[in-house]
Length: 435
Ligand SMILES: NC(=O)c1ccc[n+]([C@@H]2O[C@H](COP(=O)([O-])OP(=O)(O)OC[C@H]3O[C@@H](n4cnc5c(N)ncnc54)[C@H](O)[C@@H]3O)[C@@H](O)[C@H]2O)c1
Image (cartoon, rainbow, N blue to C red; front, side, top):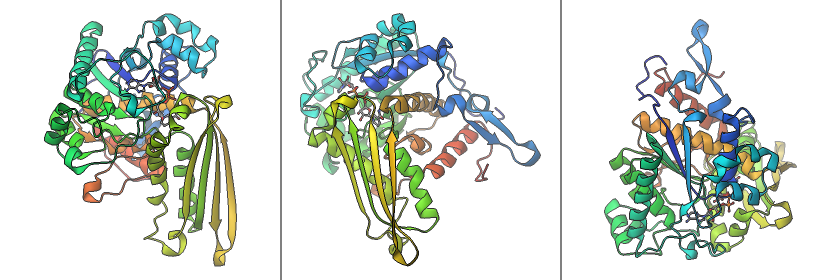
């Protein structure tokens, strides 16, 4: 930590998660098990990755925590909201992601995590019908009740800082509406007027988090903080925001594999991605309006890596299709197939097939941990607004579309952005050297 301008990570860090489902309980169980030395946080950049600092004979490869002050797993105190009243232990068992033998050693701690009542509107997730829901008079009332929850959590747990992470179901698609979503004044007016069509419950969580001085992370593809009004609020409150949609299975493969095609100047005529998935996330996404939100997020990945305008001979005409099929027997063990139609010398066609038998929540859990710890770091570093260095973890990175900014989707460019941000926050120089 040479000349790090970052405030040290003192005291406890509250991690308040919206949604206590498969991803959240896998994340929480893993953190609690790792804390006891009973499991390893595999896949987590903040726990394993080493970044080079310095050059030539001075170069060293350091863990993030040795570059800049980071909260540790022991510092974390969890809380959550959910539509269903099940505590984190019951929910982890119901999710059937982890075996009981990997949950039981931290049963007591998980049982103590009881969800607060959700800010929920059934029109945003028709397939959910839990009863652990707040009674509200308006969207503004939702915000106020959530703010009260955050304040109460802080007071009861004595945490020093808090981060709010959305790992709840994907809401129906809310198109950006310039009249409501472009300025903070309009957004607040719409919340006060109880505009249920333009104000998703997730926006109330985000508003409440930022207003209470907590960074907010959107792990689903919801447009929640991907609107100018929320950028304004995050500037005003000095808080970081990050989103959207955890980059786990197929999109991780896509953002890592597309550069192979693009770097070797091969052509692309089509990319067809399909999945089978049987967890509750899959059930919610079986509803067309909810799937639409996911589709928009998943489709955005290729276009900024294989850019039609930059290479019209190679990329001007490819067909990109994404499908998610709800198939209960597979539960959380998603299977994804990618068929990639490419072409080479003189236009001759070839095919690549990728079959990824993954586990959704096992891939998402380390992203939750990294996003939470790095957002807390960003807040202590005084960074506010959209955190582009976190694009590495996200399927559809936020960018200022009102100014025509193009998001970075290329996995290895995103990794460079991540490393440089950590270097800078640690007081080292950013650089572009290949390690
Ligand atoms: N697992 C992955 O690989 C992955 C990748 C990208 C994004 N995601 C997203 O992460 C989210 C969580 O996935 P999951 O598999 O844990 O789903 P899940 O269905 O198991 O859990 C989501 C929980 O959120 C709750 N919920 C819904 N609306 C709520 C609200 N307004 N307030 C509080 N709680 C609410 C539901 O009751 C449910 O318990 C989904 O949106 C999913 O699309 C997951």
